[in-house]
Length: 254
Image (cartoon, rainbow, N blue to C red; front, side, top):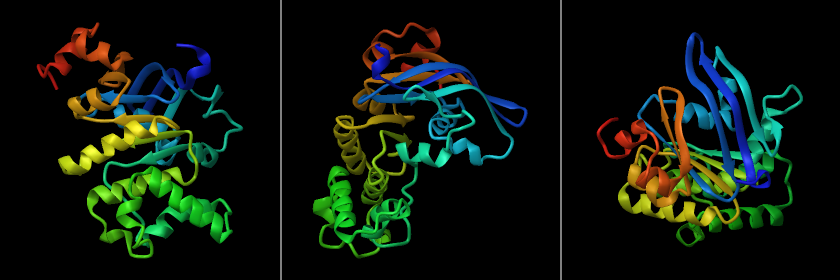
């Protein structure tokens, strides 16, 4: 694992919510243009960890962090780092699709507009490109100015991915992106994740073992706030080094 391919690295990362420690000494390296899956039982720290990567935990009162999260070699919790800038580079797609109550077009154009893009042609190009990359264009190209709330759940989730892509991030975080979707919509999102890694680094939280095995190149098993095992997905699923990992993968626990 060469340093030049590492896009995010955690060093001795600890996190507390008030008195409760939610992450304990997390050390891991996320490689660029790969899909990394975080797996483990509910409450093990997966979503907490993913929110460290774009400083979403900043908005939670009484949240305290020690250690480092390096993004492109710089500690994003350093005193001179702008959290807003980090969130431009590290996009987030949430568990439940959360389109804005605006048109499909305005959902995707929103981020670039906030960043100061005013040119109509440029906005049109960004919207079209982002929706195409999110594999939604053919389904919505004739209704861009209709409300996003009229889309199906799976379409809304792909729209939220397009919205994230519009601000040109390097990394896309996905927190249980398929948990609210049916199997057909889930398959489309999984196909999309596979396409996205050509140009982006993707980190996904999932409870679905089969999904983790299908879409990820690397997998991290977490338990009670600790990173128990991290490695290539094939190795984690076929030949786990830790008994805790094996028990979880085989369904004897969790």
